[in-house]
Image 1: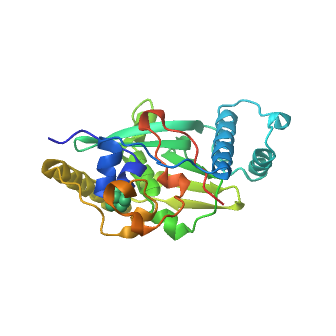
Image 2: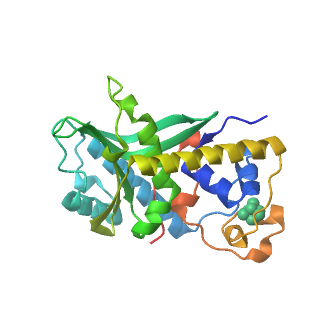
Length: 273
Ligand code: SF4
């Protein structure tokens, strides 16, 4: 029988990369990662987390005193954000909702996402809009890659299906009124904004439904095959379980590949520069 799954971007990506990894990580709950992070990586993760918390406080309306930011890199990021804040220029009716989660049903599963910042309001024509922002402290990413990422597709789909929950009258929102902006602290004047449309949502949602079907079929068979693509094994902590040590090792991309427990999901999205 299929277990009801709460599907984050990480779970989606891991299932599609390797079904055995999905089983080991989310069903058998084997520890991940197997090896400790380097000191430098730990520092970058902490700095990214601190920066996200600063922005959360800022968008909650709290005053940030730059002098209290101890870390020089984080202080510099904060100054950069103040100069280039991409979440300006919204109508006065806009509401700023930092670190906001949203869950919508996908057949007998749940889709889940947590947004760095969600801005909702009504445009000059009275149409509701929703604009997501995702803060990136690591290397900038090409627009084409961002478009194809599960983070992008999941976030846009979540808003198209569930954003009416944010309006008291449960207003429906057109996919054309949804945007997602990635802002890179290393390229602060070049945010990447991705739009959406009804046609794109129909295709995206259809693919997510197919994914749910594939997941159910895998549960029914209870067969969790190893991936044929050994490139996925290079960043995987389960090589010893699978006899894939010959794949070699690579440093995982900590932003999308790192999967905290969904009930305690961290708010950071740092990547190695
Ligand atoms: S080592 Fe390779 S086959 Fe094994 S779980 Fe990881 S990605 Fe899958």
